[in-house]
Image (cartoon, rainbow, N blue to C red; front, top):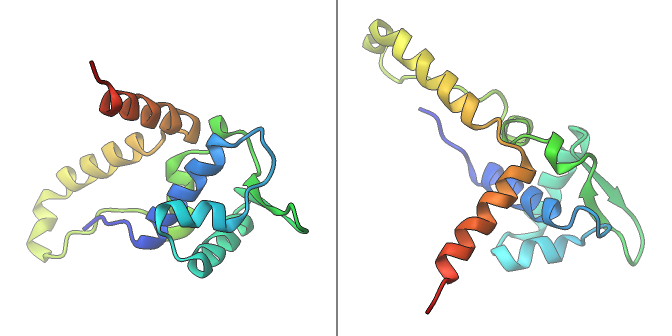
Amino acid sequence: MFSVSAKGVYGLTAMVELATKWNLGSTQIRDLAKPHGIPQHYLEQILVTLKKAGLVESYRGAQGGYALARDPGQITVLEVLSSLEGRLEIVPENECAKSLDFFWQDISTTIGTELQITLDELVSERQKHEEQLTYSI
């Protein structure tokens, strides 16, 4: 069945954080990891993978860190997750599921379409959701 590992969740979380800081220069790993409880060493490995995929750039030095390699409006969630998790697909665990291949294909298409959301759109959606949660009279 379709699942996203901790690697995918941590990587997408870091990418969303970098998207919120898009025009502010690089961000150090500890500033990405600590607020979300992500193990810093593990996040370093994830960011190396994202760098190899051309999604982030790294900068050395005291003010070094990571930044998105492209505009957040040009990077999709599917691209991030695929670079970390490999090809995303629904794989039924039971052979009798073959009779429902059309259904599994429809679900795969729907998920693929939903994952085409860009980091920019995801940041906007998160902000709307946070505003709803913090509304008070």
